[in-house]
Image (cartoon, rainbow, N blue to C red; front, side, top):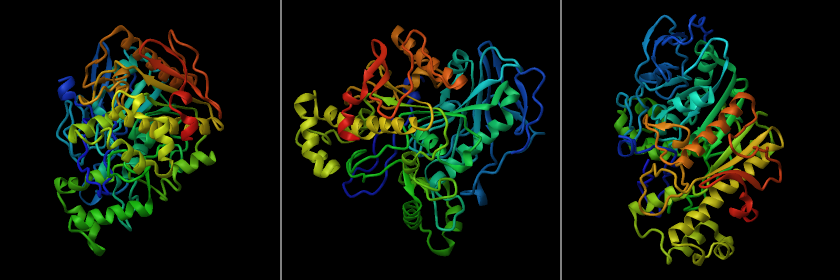
Length: 536
């Protein structure tokens, strides 16, 4: 995604999308009981609760695309909790991805046009599979600020093959369709999360049909997908559905100060209280001409394009204080009441450069030496002078890089370290940092150097749009190491790296972390680099 804000007025109350890969591939790459698995798991035809799937087998593996895991949330079922797809007698063409969920940006890839009938998933197996393998299952929840993206944008064959794992990538409802929460609406504010959880139920019922182990499921998410994965660790509804979690560039502890995401965007976290979510929903409905006792019925009659006009307001609006999320996920982590499961958490060294670069593409003069002190004052209030002392303009090549560094440290890096420290007291926790300055510029940002910006790590473990974007020997080495790190963890909870140091577990005082850097993979003093003693 090109992270270009849609409304940067200082008075806006819109929560703009948190970039989390909607890659411009058109520029870059051009719960029923499961049926008995087929006798030959290497077959391109597999029996599941969703029907008899006719996928594609090649010399690199098997894929089953566009598999329905829930009934279409359309018509009277718009804004209802997902209903299990239980059609074992159906014949399903699983040779092409399903429709992405409705969203405001074009979705690259080979798939039909976006549609509300979008609750599908894609299964990728390794080259060699047999029924006795009991492969670990990795379930990918894509990013996109809760408002964009699709599982089909991520080709998982390289990940499945090198790691010897089964990979499932999913679509889930986005924006107004996924996070609207009107008063009296059952499941309101959480439909996207409910879809993600329903995908896990599908995996429980069907993983064995592909040679996978339903008792060894790792949820993997990036950005909004990682924020969802962290929330899922705090949900009573996921007990028994998740065995491990990997969270890339997102966790429960992230927090944006005033103007910290984009100028004019108020302070927020990845989650919203039920009251705030309802307030946003009621106001959005009012602007769409739907209010009063008939508001929900009125909204269900509106066309998709009309509803998409308020889509951006539901970024970071995953609701808590609900049945799925009884409490703020950050508070649950602070109390140590999350599911006690092994976790990998991490992020990118230059996360915020994607957002600042996108801002500058829309407003070239948004971050200047003159405006930098004002941005600091707005974001950090009484601490502004301390922040200016720690991040003086003289230390940086430009004001945009200075502002990117401040917000990366305050919003992303140090809250990620805080989360790792807290979770480590309850279960094995590992933390890493992706820091390859030569990473592919997947967001097509040209205003400032991107370095290891948000989402630039994704080409290292996925082929985006079916194309491997890694070009140098070191990039390929990092990609192999990151895949090894994640998939060894998926196998047995202990991450290992080929040709790299041991991946030590974090503790409550951890400051050094494993870094996948431009020249080497090594431990670094992450806390010092990101000034976390100041921020947490």
